[in-house]
Image 1 (spheres, rainbow, N blue to C red):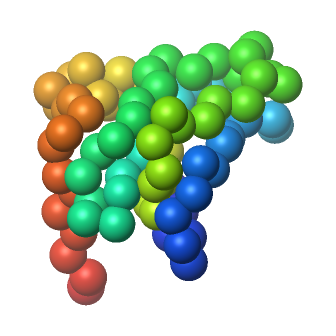
Image 2: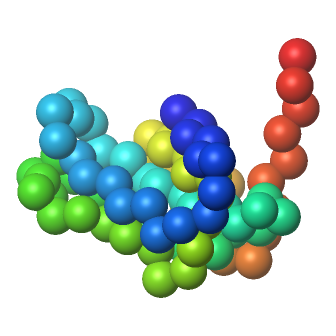
Length: 82
């Protein structure tokens, strides 16, 4: 799921009511990855995961996606509208 915010900020996410683990990726206004949390289990609730840098976009993907796709901080998000 992609979250698009009106302005940059330190948007925190938690795993409330999730039934499976996620990787969460934060992007700045240039769509550059600024922070990643990997393999977040539903059991981590009520911990809130907040980036150390402001972001405007947040992408939730299945756990393991970041490692399996060799994604890291500094990479860029490429979105194509269809």
